[in-house]
Image (cartoon, rainbow, N blue to C red; front, side, top):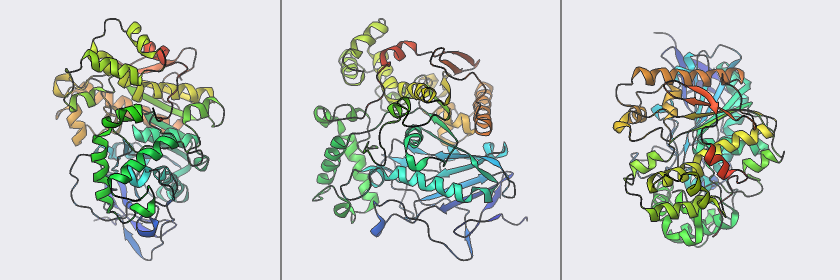
Amino acid sequence: MPEQPRVRTTEGVVQGRRRQGHAVFRGIPYARPPVGALRFAAPAPPDRWEGTRQAAEFGPLVPLSLPIDVGPPQGTDWLTLNVGTPDPGAAGLPVLVWIPVGGYLSAASSDPMFDPAALAEAGLVVVSINCRVGAEGFAYLDDVPPNRGFLDQIAALEWVQRNIAAFGGDPGRVTVAGVSAGAGSVAALLTMKPARGLFRRAMAHSVPGLHSTPALARQVTSAFAHRLGAAAPTAAALRDIDPWHLAAELTSFNAGLHAHRESWGRLTETGTALCPVVDGDVLPETPWPALTGGRASGTELLVGHTRDEFRFFSVMSGRQGTYTEQDAQAALELLAPQPHGAGAYRAAFPQAGPEELVETVYSDALFRMPSQQLAEANAAAGGTSYLFELRWTAPALGGALGACHSLDIPLAFGTLDSPVGAQLIGDEPTPEAVALSHELREAWIRFVTTGDAGWAAYRPGRRLTRVLDAGSETLPYPEQASRRIWEGHPPAPFDLS
């Protein structure tokens, strides 16, 4: 039996294991456990250790605020990362750092959908990280730094700069990537001064426009603290509450957001009460004006969205087929850009019924337009943007999911047989699915390696976009009607109504 791989990091020696032609190292701490006196604090440097630390198992899950059962808590060493590498003895390999954050409520790097095997086989060093989410990462508390989840991500990227060469990677060729809130994290990192120099390229799938003003964040966090019986929205008042109990309470709190629609407006449509705050310090401003205003530099960016972003949420909530004209009007008034967006949607989609209008405006407001506008803003800042839209319909549920949110991720990782992959694509992937997976994965590999996605770059004049389908094409941006409605209306932070 071959000897298991060992690597010396700046904190100590880790021993991983060989798997499917590559080496994996799991559960490596990049910061100290954020508990006790460190709870709700900025991440603290990891402790050093003597001897060899076993790195064969994933670190414990961070507290998740999702209506799912993840079993009993496994520990508090949440701030860990995993490395998959073709060869720890190599040098200069390109590096992909994956931020597996969903809804700013979950961060599970152990999800089989993110298995790095296919990407490592192609020559990439793949790092996936856990970071704080929910109340631990984003509650706006008076006595601790805001946006702690972003600070965790920066600490992980600093670890990569210190250590990735020991795993065969090139610290000068790091691409940071994510989907949904992970993509929102990537977009935020583009604008944050402490993140500068920590990565060279970025990939962002389905970028959300989820940010709050301090005024709204303070009111929401105060309401959440009051629900818990805390005297004030402070770390001191919440520190003794069990983290998993706090996460469960946030799950319930998120489920009741609609009751606050008159006060909290658009935020109540997201299902995420505690999202990143534009605090002027950790996150100085949202990415779109920062890039277009020249306060952040453009980069090599691969960004895109699916055609039917909202369909997954519509189907899984049981709402598909039930939307009324009243639902459509409420969605348009709340989410379309003011003051004329609702009428503009009616004019642009005159044949659309309530179902199509609801799905279109939700898809646009939550993911499609923030993604398209990030491509445009990055290009305006001097960067090179590659834009895509996934148009291929997921075969599961008789095609009811369409080209839904997150369908692109098992395709890109090549994890079609993972639980999520099978849920979206089916237990037996078709040759069409396999071919599309190969195409998207090759685009990732090429981009991470060279900075070129393999199709024409997005320019504000032509707006060329790779439309991924059974027969993929590079076309002018396909959602032109929505783009025109949102032109001049970048995602703005949620504020008090």
